[in-house]
Structure formats: structure tokens, C-alpha cells
Image (cartoon, rainbow, N blue to C red; front, side, top):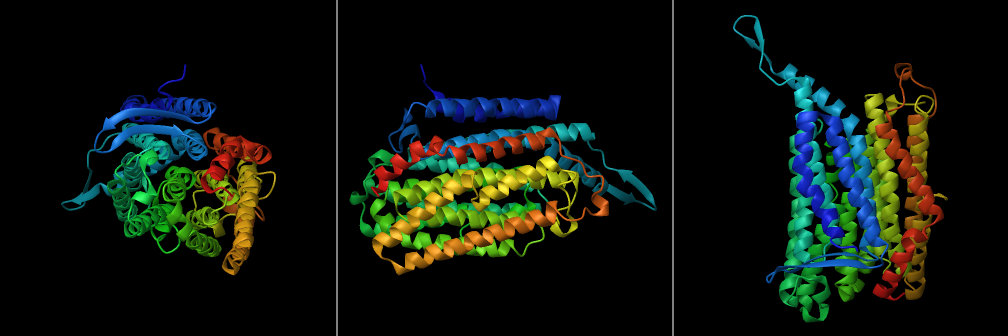
Amino acid sequence: MMQYLLLQAIFLPLLLSPVAYILGKRSGPNAATWFSFGIMAYCTAIVILASTSGNYGEHYPWTQQFGEFGLVLDGLSTPFAIIIYVVSTLVVLFSKPYMVAKLTAQYQEKANSQKQVVGEGQTTMVESASLKSYVNQQVGIYYALYLVMAMGMLGAVLATNLIEFYIFFEFMLIPAFFMIALWGYELKRRVALLFFFWTHVGAVALLLGFLAIGLYSGSFNYADIHESAIPHSILVLAAIGIIIGLGVKMAAFVIHVWLPHTYRAAPTPLNALSSGAMMGVGAYGFFRFLAMLLPAEFGHVALFLNLWGVATMLYGSIMALTQDDIRKFFAYSSISQMGYILFGIGSASALGLSGSELFFVSTSIGKVILFLMVGAIILQVGTRSITKMGGLAANMPITATCAMIGVLTLMGIPPTIGFMSEWTMFTGVLQTAIQEGSTIRVVSFALGLIATVITMAYSLWMMKRVFFGKLPEHLKNTKEASWYVTGPMMVLAGFSIVIGIYPDIFFNKIIPFMRGLVGV
């Protein structure tokens, strides 16, 4: 008998995060890694198990002021929940070699900075823990934060209550702040504050929108919110707050400025999680809070979202073409990919919305593969400059093959999942343009196709410069990364092809839900 499955999936990572810290501190990276992997794998399995029973929900009493504490897997939340936990589980493994290498370098830098001149020519070393002790403790902290962040992401997409969503949203953001501040690069503390400021400005705007909806409708529970009970002026303000709050999280054009700095400074595992899971929570919010809870207001802003998506697609893809730092390259690529989701949501059609949701799954798989590729290159090559790379396919064939599948996924080339998601989404966008007889939507559709061509250009251009051509002399001894890195890449590459061939794995849930939502 299935019970408390979703409650376990959410709270086990939170409750056991102190154990991950203790294991890391006392037994080292291996123990913390495999313990965290075991927790995430178990929780992923029970989320998938719960999803097989159709719409599955759990409801618990909470407070009179906020309503119930509920968790639900429906046609909207199921794909988000599964991909968030699958990605989170696999990135656990990649984190081990990356964080050990990062912490070792950080320890050496810290030790060198502690050397100081005392008196005339006398030097001394400030007392510090051994390298092993330092790495163990920091790895323990890292995995404790990691588990809390994963819990926050899943809780946000399963929540059935506005305040509940906001609480989980904060659980997702705060660990990311500490990860950047503790283990980032260059101006990491300044960038962590930039990340904190922007994401919490968005979070506050989101909260204000939630409070307006909840107080005027008389309930914070999704099921009890009736748009007709809310004055129109309040609805407009609430929709603006929600759009700003979620747009910041998705790094949509104009309010995207925090993301390139963050991706350049953040540790690569966090970049993989952010691009492959965390930014998707913002996309989820547009489906749940606008299309589902405020359908009339959604109809008023749908065209704006469509055009905003096109602007984000074009800006991100054009900026990606100009980058040499491979982290900033993928930062702008991520901005562009989030634009596609807004583009599909703005179609306000069942096919457009369905394709947009599947596109989240697609871009999550593709971007995580490519960020793992970035991590492999940083570990094996030691540079982030694309111009200093080339010919790496000869020495890193597994990484190159998986990266190519990731690129094909972003480009929307069959048989990857990218093809089915983009085909469905663009069909929905064109369908709406024809039905409405809207010239603006037709132009938007055409610009979307142009953005897709630019996506193909920057993706293939990156692959050529990194993996093909002449292998530079200083890269002659480069070797393939460990299986902690290549294993997750191969699993995700396999997922992209399997779901691309059998998209009904997700479409069987997504399309009926979206048809019930918008009717067309």
C-alpha cells in the first residue's frame, strides 16, 4: 500500500542532511557521496513509483491561517518532479571528483595566503587543519547543503499551497547562495550577494503576488482559489508580481543580468543543477500560477510572454556566439533555452504548453550533459577558455560523444527528446497564430525559427572549437575523466534518445492535463 511516498521524497533529504555532513567529516568524500546518492536514488524511485498510479496526492493538516500542507503529482508536476530528482541524483556522483579537486586547490590557495612575514625575514605558517581534514569537512558541508537544495526544488513543484511553495522556494535558493560564497571562483562572495539580491527581489515580488491572491480569494490552497473572487486591479498587480518573480528565476531578458556572473563564479555542480533543475522551478510557476490559477489574466498576458520568450531566445543565443569563457557561453545558452519555454507558454494552446513542458525535460537533460562536459574539461584540462582547447575528442571520446548528444538535444535534432519538444511547441505556437489570425504571432514564430538556427550555429561552433581540429601541444596528455563524470553523462544521453523515441512516457500525462487547462 502506497502512503507517505511524497512526504518521504521531500523530507528524507532534509532530515538526513546532517548525517551526510557527519559522514563527510569523519569518513571522507566517498562515504558522503554514496550516502547522498543512496538517499537521492531512493527518493527518485519513490517519486517515479507514485507517478505510475495516475494523479497521486497527499494532504496533511497544517494551519488555519495558511490552509493544508499538500503534495501532488499531476500532469504538470510529474515531469518536473522526475527530472529534478533524476538530475539531482546523477550530479551527486559528478560532485565527488569535482569538489575534491576544487577543495584541494582552495586549500593550497588558503595555505599560501596564510604565510606572512614576521619581523625581519622570518616567515611562519598560521596553524590550519590538514588537507584531508579540510576536504572532508567541506565535502560534508557541501552534501548537506546539496540535499537541502534538492528537497526545496522538489517541494516547490509538488506543493498545493502558495505559502508552501514560497517556503520550499527559499529552501532552494539559500543553499545555492552558500555554495557560491564558499566554493565559487574569482569574486565569489560579491557574486553570491548579487545572486542573493536578484533572486530574493524576485522572491519578494512573488510573495506579494501570492499574498494578494490568497488574502482576496480567502485561501492559499490552489484548489480553493477562484480568480473571479479577486478584484481585477488586484489580479493585475498579482500577475505582475508573479511574472517578475518567476522571470527573475528564469533569467528572462532584461532581468537576466545576475545569471552570467553567477555561472562564471559558481561551482560547476551548482551550474548543472541550476540550469537543469532550479531554473525549471520558475518555468513551472508560469504554468501553475498563471495558466492554471489565473486563466483569464493569463489570456491577457499570453502574447506578451510569447514575445518576451522570443526576445530572450534571440538575446541569449546571440550573446553565446560572442563568448570565450565556456561557463559564460553556457550561461547565455541557458538564458536562450528558458526563452523557448516562455515562447511556448505564450502560445496559450495545449500543444504549445505541452511542448514547452517537455522542452523543460529536454533542456534539463541537454544542459546537464553539457555542464558535466564543462566539469570534465576543467578537471582534465584546467582551462575555461574555448580558444585554448581543440581536438579533445581524440583523448576524451566518451565526453565528446555525450556532449554531441547534448548539443543535438539543444538543437532539436531527432532522435533526441529535443526534436519532439520543439516540434510540438512550435506547432502549438503556429496553431495559435493561425487561429487568431495574428500577424504579430506569425512574426514571433518566424523569429523563433531564426533563434533556433542561431542555437544550432553556436552549439556546433562550440563543439568544433573544443573537440575537433588540431590538438594543442599542451593538451597531448589529456585523458578521459573518471566514471563519476562520464557515467552520469552517458545515462542522461541515453535518456535523451529513449524519451525522444518514446515521448509518450511524458506526453501521456502532459497533453491531457494541458487540454483540460486551455481546451485547445
